[in-house]
Length: 449
Image (cartoon, rainbow, N blue to C red; front, side, top):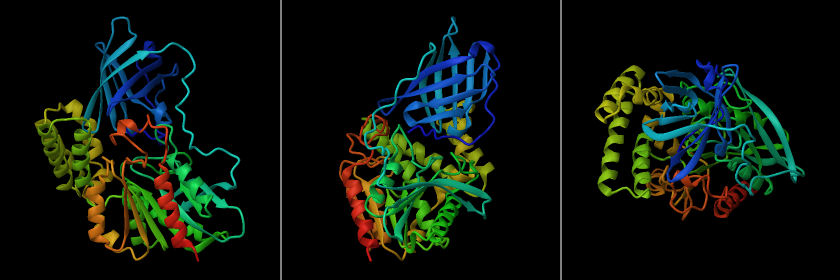
């Protein structure tokens, strides 16, 4: 899946050629689905990328240049890079988009002036008026020196109310965890608040109104934000300090147990597609599952699995040394047939502190240390955090946890066909009713006095 979240503020590229000015449109084929991309080269030389389906706009582009008829640019926040030939009439760039270890064809064509097309229908996205209070809030993580911004929804009536803090998946996400115009955290907040549970959701570091952001920040750092969020909620008179829980999706499922380990006095924890094995194990399996679901032959799946395992070993074996990890990755990528230019973005991202922590971190000790009610929900067709791999591991680590695998659901908890990331944007449903009911019923039960 191409992760292009709303970025932190960084200086965008200055275009070197005035005739590159304009709006350039194209699409990537991701898991059989078209993902539109837009490159906007402004008259003042600033350059931005938009991913309309993911509701990501104004992503800074750097290093835009044209040399010898070849156009190049980099998108740091997405760890992506484009290189392509410019047509004789100057209206088309034909080349490849590289991100992580993947490289995909991309053709960008200069668009005529006009309005952008409307986004896809998302009927579950909550719209006012709401039968509860919704408040924009900020809270300070003094240890990190940053302020985080979010939305708190509180039921109407006499409190104090139980509450839950929502923790997003990997990549810099907004408070709604917006992807492909879906706003799953807004849907979760609406559903739970209607059932009497206050919900705090907040922008990740470097996104929206939150400070910080960067590849040097790890899951361990994000856990301190969750600790701060719980502490802030405990100071509100309308929230019951003894009934505050944490609910993490995907990587947020690593953050929640770590936050408890760091001292967050959570009354309960919910994991949605939460990892129970190392990041390296998940990524290797993810590559194999996606290839299988896409119809690749068993021999090609085995080859992809082995190649990815080699990349992960280069990271994990050098988890405490970024330079050594980068050197090992360069060698592994070269052996896999990648040129230095193709490998550059992958090396920077995969040797970063954030990636090295994720790949090498084993969540088992933090999960085993949870001494409160724990619910883990997995999608039966999830190819990003496979249900069998992680639910079985979690059941061994925490035999008393309530582990639920919902058949037919993907990583986003949508009812899906293949489970491939390419389906996420084509599915109208944001969250399956089975997921909403399973989680809602459980939280109401464990928080009822």
